[in-house]
Image 1 (cartoon, one colour):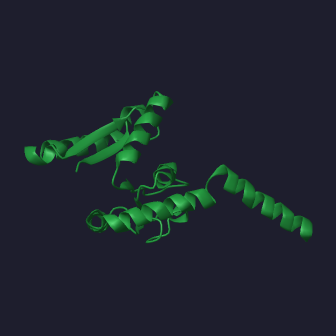
Image 2 (cartoon, helix red, strand yellow):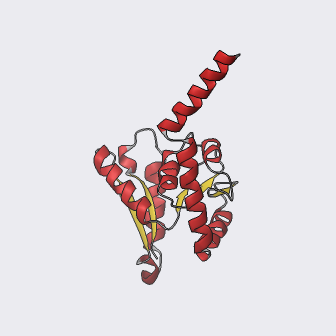
Image 3 (cartoon, rainbow, N blue to C red):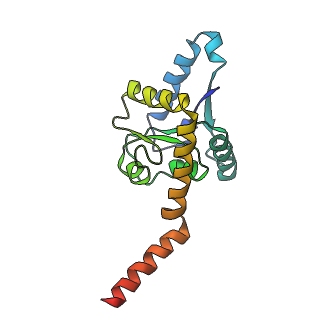
Length: 169
């Protein structure tokens, strides 16, 4: 098993001034790992200049992942989480507003209350990795939730029901 730490190329994201600092910290921590452990970890910077290249890489990573983590401090509707859910990949996320609207803890994925609590995040990840049956169950439930709630046709269905209820009133 390999741990991928994936994020945007920080030099290409103008509204993320801390990005370079975080990537430097991660790179430094990576270099300090035992060489044996280094072979199990990879830092991946996603290209931001090419939407097509970025999309291909994100799709490939999500499809081959055992678990996807979206550990945001703040998040609107997180497409990263929804895309992974659609691929039936279990998601562990912080309970930032948009993410907790997408994922119901223990039903379609797992939520961690504090995105800065590394121990809680590690515990949830360990639990999912140790229980592949539960992980697959969460992933399938997540895919069904995306199908029922978040695809364009399901949104259209919700709007039509709303319009019909307004006409009936």
